[in-house]
Amino acid sequence: MGVMVADRLCAGKTLQDIRVITLDLDDTLWEIMPVIRRAEAALGDWLAKRYPRIPERWPRDRMHTLREELVAQHADKAHDLTFLRKEMLALMARDAGYDASLNEAAFAVFDEHRNALETFPDVEPALSKLKRHYRVIAVTNGNADLKKIGIDRWFDGFVSARTAGAAKPDSRIFRAAVLTGGASPAETLHVGDHPQQDVAGALAAGLRAVWVNRRRAEWPAEYAPADLEVSDLGVLADFLTNGRPGTA
View 1: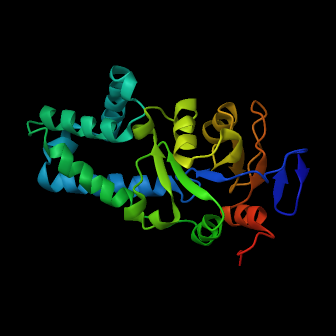
View 2 (view 1 turned 90 degrees about the vertical axis):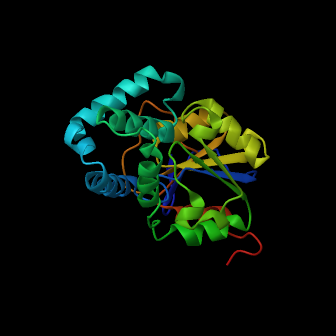
């Protein structure tokens, strides 16, 4: 791929016909693992105070095993992270002698902290710029809540693995995103950090694709390259909107 100032555009490709941008969330707009660790720690403290037999009986390694068992038992719902966490909490509650219905309140604690996060500094200025020229659709395998995070105003639609019935890189979630965006796959640009889930999945579904490579990683040779590689979302917004009327 030919190297530009801060991007890499695949030779012979342009992005002039794009009408819709579909945008991954976790690790594209924010770093997710610190958020999940804080949310799980908050949930653990909440359980220890109110339902102490659960953390006593379910150390982290046993919880990990239970999650793997649930994924195997509910293969048709393995993409639904909310279902898996609620089911795990219900099973642990019953095992510890509590009412399984506590899983709803427990999940609410996790969810509150899971959505208490800060985006990367480049994200909101870039979203503001992109929103002036494109329909912007969130596409995620996770269970982020755009309104709770405070960025829902920048989006025209939301597609999750839970609502689509499949997780990236499955083509079904990309088809749902294209339908939500209202343009053809070739007029839809998917933007994300994951080479397989985001780039390879989008390309296989007929979309265009941008790799957000914040860590300056090497592209994995087993996948066809993205149409464009950028170091952050601000670079992408500048590249796509350069020279367009109304762009600050």
